[in-house]
Image (cartoon, rainbow, N blue to C red; front, side, top):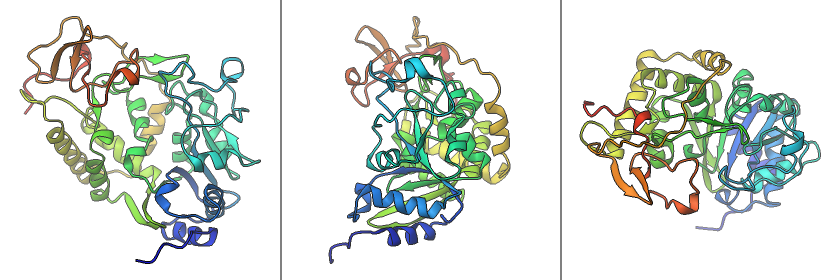
Length: 359
């Protein structure tokens, strides 16, 4: 096979048009530069093509996230003194890829106000999409870029990446205050999302991908060496609203009955999501999501259990001085480096939905 010719702005713009991205669209981008293959001019060329595809009155927004929330250096330096405000003045670098950095470096780029999950953008509508983030107590809450993208009928572009990167899924968790959403940490404006569950999105992204395809939400095509995807933000919001109405635990794996088989549970839940969409699918349900996002929410406090349910099939015993659960992620007071991937999280039996008699 002959080597791939380097992508240029014209080729990229044509590939984006093939995915339905044309002026004046508003696009939220998750991207991997390396997945595209050789690009003449690198990330700056990709940004130029994205901007051209969106048009001057559209918008391209992309993550410029900082360190992990458990890091002591989690925030932009200006956050302590200057936030919150409609747009962030910081020009500090983010840690979410070369394409995001190339957007941030544009002279006309704007940035949303959030200490850990700031977004950057270019285009005439970027300031609107990013300008409400300072009112959100979590990365995906009230007036965040995710909800404003719904208002503007925008699209998600997964450029060389898959559904594992779709942060938008957390929006419905926030709006519904799902049972596994734990206490908000005000300083970091973040919530410990999964103290009682591990996300299907991260464990088995292929199953979520299949569910979205069966629901008709994914449009896929080649961009350079990658397969990329476009999702209508309103369709995704409506799908997730219907799915979580059917089962508020549908996005996380849990013990079922007397067994803990996360893959089986994920298969059953993603199948139920598409079944609920076929039966109750309402493409205007995103409006309910936006409305719910404006309601006050009171997440339950994070409470490691003192009396573990040792008969639960996910109970892992005492490890590191704490009761552990195979079905849980690490606690908000634990550091990632002290918690190897796949290791049992902290048991939170008082917040868990396991009853021991699920079918």
